[in-house]
Length: 263
Image 1: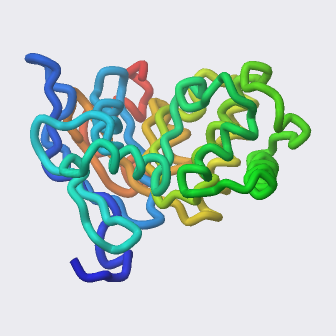
Image 2: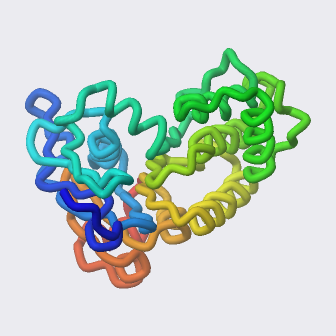
């Protein structure tokens, strides 16, 4: 495909994505486009299909039906699941970032904080120790971690610090797209507020595209421009975040917004 402006086409496009777990539907017929620099939130109660959808679009769970394609930095479009597993892994380590709800799932707990960050740069060919260490220190500063902790092991960090470290590890390669699964889940309110402010600043500063799964509508409102509401595996409502939350049209969304459902 000819090289084109990245803003002429979606960065990521899903068409009728469907995942089955035996006879159970994980998600069904999900279609949407994500544009460069756009942040989409996916909300719904537990079991609504939002994490299944996130795993599929982030190349970790092949859908049973449908297509997910992505525009590489070269401008070429690729079907994620027609790529070899090695190429998908490389994509995840370079052009993408994946921030897990439990930061231990996204960090190597057996190596230092600095090594966790610099490992991603090594995937792009970085080898000079001084340069790698400098980049790690810069990113620790960017996520408001004390650089004197660069040689400390992640197990010595608090939950909020671990999430900041995971974010630094993901953003050091300057990815074009970041997937976040409940990025502030399990943190106390004050830590959560500071982390949300940090995520919002970094997404804006780096002009990142992002897909954020959350059960918290306040988080969705703060971080996303567009919202998908999922219920029983399907997207039941979508639109601009403020519009959906201020004037919900679907009965399920109305219940979510009025907090009748525990999500």
